[in-house]
Amino acid sequence: MVLVFFLLFLISLFIIIILISNLKISVKKLEVSNEIENTDILKSFTVSIGVYIFNKIKIFSKDINKQDLEKAKNSKKIEELKNKFFEKETVKEKKQDIKMNIDVLKKLDPKLEKIKLDLKLGTEDVVLTSFLIVIVSIIISMMLSKIIKKYDEKKYKYMIIPVYNNSNSIKITLEGIIDIKLVNIISIIFRLWFRRDKIDKRTSDRGSYVDSNEQYSRNDRCKYNYRRAN
Image 1 (cartoon, one colour):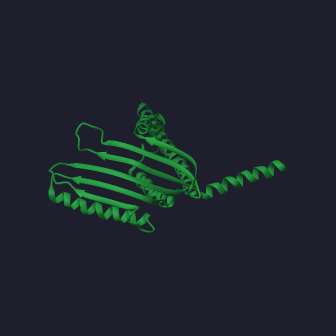
Image 2 (cartoon, rainbow, N blue to C red):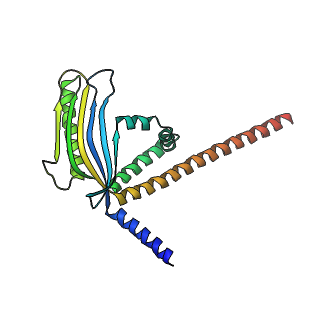
Image 3 (cartoon, rainbow, N blue to C red):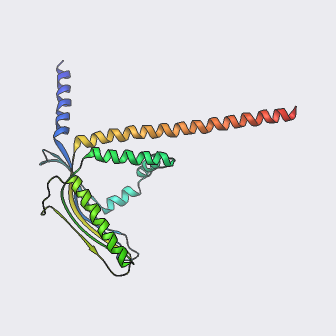
């Protein structure tokens, strides 16, 4: 009986910790640029991921840099996941998955605590460059309005600069902090897990359908050859 109460206490404590905890993704430095030819477009990448109670008490933290990204990119497990989720899907299924991913991101409900963005953009056409600068500015403004509850010019800064040098160039420098409730992340994990089962079922059904058609085709050929022999 005491063991049961102890287990219930641990489960309750675990649930409470999840409800009051947040995941913070801190982009300390992100720089992307194609200004120098024949070099890696990702110049710098440093991100810190931490779990906080009451948004203040840190209970876990992990730094990720450019080298970690390279290792993950070459990982066989990552490749297997990509193949599982994105390959062997019809166009209709891919559209359904995109819609599902958008819904998942909405449920995630991220909060932007801070951002500093510098974007330099240029093309070979001056008119096109000016047009893209306007479009990008509108898109960024719309995105920020969705995830920022109260604007503070000290916390949210972005600058978009046109580059008129008759070449296709881009340079992005980003710093920021994104805050996500842990309970939302767990909910998304369950959604993705059910999505994976759904994809497995699709693949299995298609395989069964193809095998069935091949079997019927073989039977039809056998019947046809039998009639010819008679």
